[in-house]
Image (cartoon, rainbow, N blue to C red; front, side, top):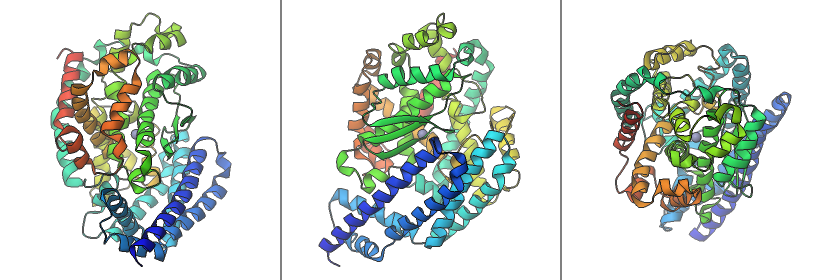
Length: 499
Ligand code: ZN
């Protein structure tokens, strides 16, 4: 096969894979939002067949030959990267037969369905057999993919190219030693800031109206390219750059839950929307790492969404939507309240300071599962013990404990650490951004576009053209440096609590 033939086949097969992935993603969004639960058995069977077909296209002998041929040529920076990402993914796919791929896809779908059931009933025992099966399958799959490295490292690298246990251990060691003492000091003073008005009753219908008419408008989350539905666990599905769908969940006793989860998902959406359009349909668009993605979503949620300037034009509208709860609460009181730090049970609702500890707990459990130092029996108990050990709190139910997150239900082991990594990357980026534009002045004027334009031009437009460290050097002048994150949290919370 010559270079010209290889390119033709490579591009054709890629388009076919894109078509399958679009259909599978759309069905996934549908399944998580509007599809009736009773239809899940039939739906899962059909989707597993689709996954099998996608496998056949991805492992077509002509495509394999095309990838092998193209990887011998210098095709320019962009195409070289695209092909090398295709090669990496192909090598991992080829370790399994079509039947194994279908079996794994089915196990993930059944895992999700039964996690949702278990979460509704707050009963871990419903989900446990499915989780154990996914753990067992994932351990075997890791060994099959790469016997030379530790099984958990295989997955850490999947979600963040180049990351491994050694690097995460070093990062979390810093988080532990620098932040745990501060968390304890702050926890002792957490009652000093009144945030009780955030937990009054906020009817879901009124929340929805505010989110769609005010928040999303401020965020310029435009209906022309985006959509927002409701699901058990908020997520973003980037079907294409101009078809990005998010979900949210309304908690009637907590207004911040929905507010900040939407801002988070809109952060992901901007990334999907703002990668240069020339990369649409290529691996440079598809293979953006989770750490890079979380750096942008957590950036909007925290580094922008929790500052006063963000709320200058928006807060009066929130007050108007919920006068009984907020009319006597000033903007400054509201900002203090949404930044209160207090050990809590739910990761997605956690404040910035305790957030990385939620991730540390999940990281330690995952690491222990894969190296065998944690038994998979009674994982719910281990979860609860760690919450007590690190955050000093008792888990009151499985729903608020081990069942709170969707990630293990489809075997996304290795994803969690990228949330903390992404937060830390965001702080490094913020440091650079604040030197170049006046973020507060722009936000206070309601000019959210100027800020997302900055993110687009300095980070998002590149997609996965570079790995995280290379991109960070390009954007901030240095590789990943967690000091910015630690300093940001120390300064912010010392000031907030007068420490
Ligand atoms: Zn996210």
